[in-house]
Length: 350
Image (cartoon, rainbow, N blue to C red; front, side, top):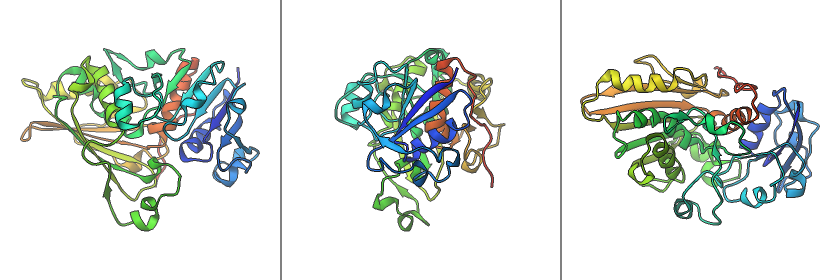
């Protein structure tokens, strides 16, 4: 069976990455691409790397245009998906790459986003532990899927095994992330100009204000059976001059009486059978260069007994494993297709 697909926000970074992956998918046909201000223009004018899709023209983003497909991807700014998802009730599968359907708490949504709150959908991080099982079990047969925030899924994958196994203290998590500007979208912003970011590293959303914090708390609480409020995290992203990528360094105190073997075993057990989340051998740590273009999260683990903390370093491509790859991987699971279809664990080098 071939599934018909529409992709909204197709002129942006997330929409473009969804299209790049789907263009190599044998079970889908990309029939419709939509945009707002760029509607009416050739897709290739905004995504010149997508040569196989040069025949497509950007349509207006309306419920009528998006309806009538088997699958709809929404790659829209936060707060804009809900107006369309409400109107796509007859669409068999809708996948939202925005934040509108990620959070379970209306209070958290109001605090970090604001605007109308929409119901949470199945979370598109298949490898996450949820009450002792993997999130992929909740994605089988799903008709509504929320793709993750790239920073949020990176930190959650970094720490969920330790939280679930009780080998780290989730009340004192500290994470610092080096992130590329593509995570902020394609809209023209002065702080993202090359002259502003080249040769510089700039922290932003400092002091507990980043929107991905409640998403991390929600994921780690689900992994451990705790309340979200019991997950305390100091989260500091730093904008660095690389187009793609996240390098997240996360630390947490070691739980009392836990051995080094207990700690490493928690991560080994969680990801031993995962193709797209890989724990590196002891003493090795990932680079963002190793995951560019791949649907892979690479994790390095260190145990700092002097500081009594576990250190987890994780690298992902924010546009692939962080967003579009996770969305397509989850689509494959929902439809009963091979999970790795159209997705690569190999990066692009140099």
